[in-house]
Image (cartoon, rainbow, N blue to C red; front, side):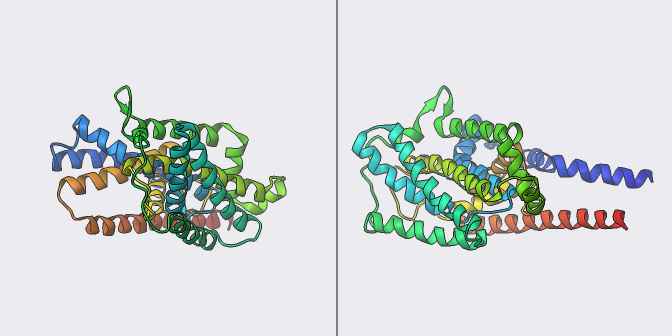
Length: 325
C-alpha cells in the first residue's frame, strides 16, 4: 500500500512540476556543453528569441485548454503585420501600428472561432483554411513584393526598457495578464470548463459558442502584438515571415504541461515551455547544428510531448474506470 501511495505521489509530483525539472536539468546540461550558455548576453538573447513565439504560445495555450487549436497564427502574424506597416507609414504612430495589427488579427482569429463554434467545423480544418487565406492575402496585399522601407518601425523591437529588451517586456507582461485571466476571472474558469467537458458546461448554463469565439478573439489580440514585434524584428514586411511559428508555439505549450486534449494548462508552465524550446534552439546553434536538423529535433519534441500527454490521459481514464468497478 505504501509503495502504491509513493508511486501515486511521484506521478502527481511529476505531473505538476515535471517541466520545471526538465528546465533545471536542461540548464545544467547546456552550461556544461557550452561555457557561453549562462552569460548575460546569451540569456538575454534566448529571451529575445522566444519573445514572439512565446506570446503565440500563450495564444495557443488558451485555445488548447478550451479544447481547440489554431494552425493559422503564423500566417495571421504575417498578414496583420504587413497591414500594420502601412498604418505606421501613414500615421507615424506606434499606437496605431499596434491597434491596426491587433484589429486585423482579431478579425482573422474570430472568423476561425465563428467557423468552429457556429458552423461546427473542426478547429484543425477551420484554422488550416485561415492559414491559407491569410498567407495568400499577404501576397495579394503587396502583389507578392516585400515591404523594405518601413522607417523607424524596427525600433519597437530593438529598444530597451532599462536593461530589458522591449520584446521581452511584452512577453513578461502578457504572461502575467494571461495568468490573471486564467486564475482570477470567470472567463478563465469557463475556458477550463469547456475544455474539460462541454456537455456538462452546456448544462451549467455557460454559453460555449460565445466563449469559444471570445477565446479565439483573445488569441487574436496576442497574435497582433506578436505581429508588430515580428515585423520590427526582421525590419521589413515579408509575405513569408513567421512560417511554422504555430508549430513552435504548440510545442512550447504542450512541453509546458498543457494537455492537448483540453482542460489542463497554466501560464507559468507555458512560459517555462517556451524557455525550454528557446534553450534547445540556442544550444543547437551554439554547438553548430544545422537549421534543418533543428527542425527535425523540434518535430520529434512535439511528437514526444503530445504522446506523453496522451499516455498520461489514458492512465487517468483507466484508473477512474478501475475505481468505478
